[in-house]
Image 1: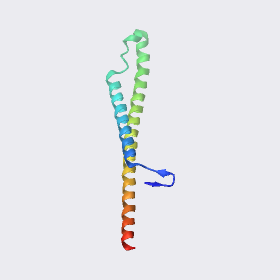
Image 2 (image 1 turned 45 degrees about the horizontal axis):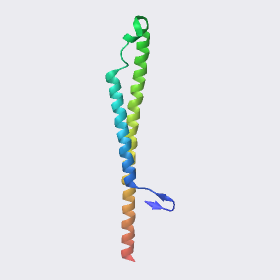
Image 3 (image 1 turned 135 degrees about the vertical axis):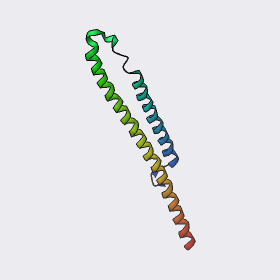
Image 4 (image 1 turned 60 degrees about the horizontal axis):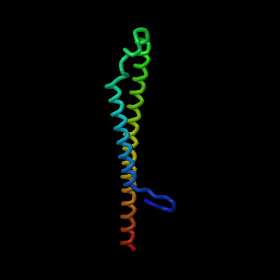
Length: 107
């Protein structure tokens, strides 16, 4: 779709959507890896500090996991919206071209 000073490439929108989807998947993979590894255990903090430090780290890990999951979900939604926009632009262009052809036949 184009006009004076404005242009949209559905192919580029779709390519960008794929990049966003890839990033969302990598974020999801990082969150999964973080859950498997954890924070490295609590033994390194000694007997005295292991309990309070461990509790704080578990809270932080839970917040980080929630944040990463939300970021991945947002990436998925953005990717889907970009793909829909590309499809909509293509349909609008196709419909306008068809209307122009139909009008040309009547003239």
